[in-house]
Length: 197
Image (cartoon, rainbow, N blue to C red; front, side, top):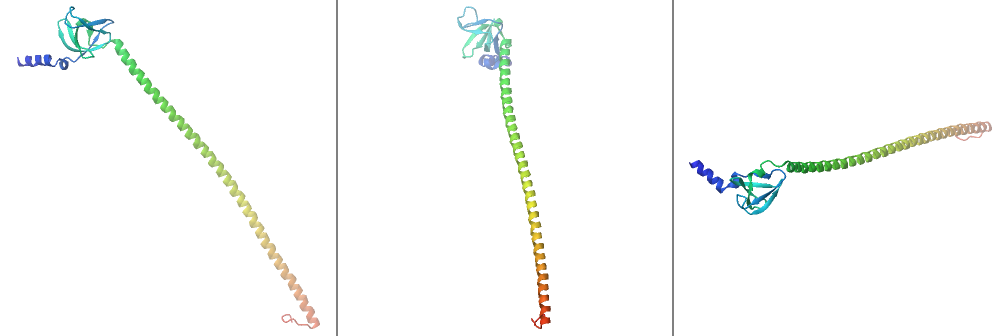
């Protein structure tokens, strides 16, 4: 008995908690929401296919439902179902699909932007590499030219030193011959120049 009383109180005092099921208009029709659980009650609202209401209770052949605006009314049991109508499911799936398509398109656009940025970076890197190669080639050419000039200068310098040495040696030979002939003549003539006497 105690269980029955507790269960009854729960259903009466907290119907939204115990019966919180969603109901939908089944088929393609318009269902009147009445103020009482019979066909005599005034029509307070009208539900269309796919409209969702919350089950608050039952009275005979009618469900007591809570409308989206919070008001309560009665609808015939045969016009309602717990299963969401196919049209509403399709609409929800279509919305979900459209959202996924938008997300995929956004990701594709982002990936395209990233790909474009990577292509630009690659192009810049390729241009920088080509410029670096050109600079290396130019510097190698300059180094080769400078080495050739240095070698030419060294050869010319060595040749000048050689010529300078030859000139000095030749001048020494000439001066030796001149001094030697002067010394011989002066001995014959009896003139003495100090060292050569």
